[in-house]
Image (tube, rainbow, N blue to C red; front, side):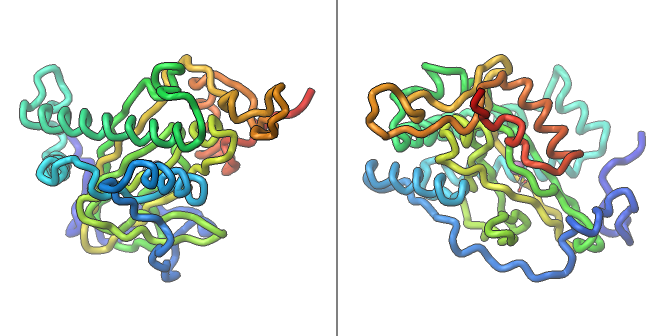
Length: 303
Ligand code: OGA
Ligand code: NI
């Protein structure tokens, strides 16, 4: 079978089909290091922690999380096993996902996804509390955090990183994302400019997805990001994504919307309600072909 992954020695130039249109190519412009992304230490007093996380989600939609309690060894192992996976010949890669998967791979990825899933739900609870939602809003009261998806990414070395992207500009179509990474490549978009995220050892990059932006009625921001490639080294990342169930009804949380008690704490709904699987379909069209905000078509219009 044809080999899908090329190594540096085999690739002398960027294949034509990988070259991005000039408007979205990274080019050679130097991207400044991002100083403003909050680095949040989980080993601190709970009220302060909730405040810091909520503020980060309001301002940037992205933050780094340290001292989160997941063992360093597990993070290291899961990154290593992911790298090994991408080094395997094509046939063996596919067999790992067959009915008889490699035990070590399955166990490591299984315990990693369990740990990071639990951590994401804890962070979501804190965000809910920061927003003033009732306890367990995302998981007991709704199906907004019903599913977890793991995504292993490998961005091979690229002969000319100015021409292409590992991932083009996007926001995630989910509630919250945890990225495990160990080298630079991830960039965030803010004030019409790109900034490089500084990799911190054993930290997670956490970003808010479009669904949480909608549920928060625009109080929290979906952090838009992209991935650039590197000329010399490949980059491996592991992403964990918390999603609603496919049939989940998504809408701004009622307590964040103007209600009849005139306490002025709420505001007009910014988004109309919809079913998550319909959003996913339109998200893919808007992100991949229309280059418009996937939120546009869900903006609430008064009848
Ligand atoms: C994603 C993503 C970032 C990375 O998978 O949506 O943004 O660094 N990944 O791999
Ligand atoms: Ni993403």
